[in-house]
Length: 311
Image (cartoon, helix red, strand yellow):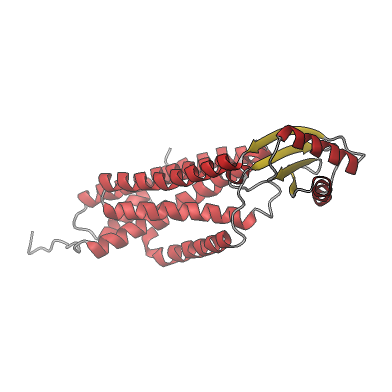
């Protein structure tokens, strides 16, 4: 099925608008990454977290105060999906079983009307957390380097630069969103292994879409050698538009369903995919392609149209 057939939208004439939009998104994202910054999950900072079913609505601030007074440790307590379920997190070390018993007894005494039960426990030591953080950083930058090398070999350095800048744009925007809203959303937006997996998925999805556009641009550049490169690139984007919209649209529907009914644990993961796929679709057209055209026009000889005298 082709929903955009024989269209001729002038995408590349609005470069300034797309650069402005991307500039605003990146500025907000970078400022958010500086302050308030990302919230690291248990995977990357160590500690223990519990999903606690209290049976009744328990204020998270009062629960955190009761746990701190009873144990002398700092606890972070948030609602987890509904007021009767709490996510209790602490960096305190020691035996997780003993800590779990302390949480149950303390909340049971502080809120007698509640029926406290632990629904899930997750614990990571500080050494393992540090190792996981280092590996996550290596994975993300390693993926970008491999993609840079792949695009350089398959196309040329201009395409490679455009692809990596576009991927960095997508990743920074998603991370900026998590930094900006992690204290606002009713579900966790902490950076953990699931979010790193989502970022790598976004990188893979975005580069796949970008490569399709790049391949068509290169193909048309060989077919229409006498036309200006910007016109050729714009024609290539139009011919891949149907594939881009259908692929992104169906994927977004599936991820949206995951976000809506996938449960609290998958909210952050699916939100990262939703934003990343949407931004990646936008950037493959309005960021990657204009950069390729700009680099081509600056670092390649101008194309010449054939005149009747030269035919």
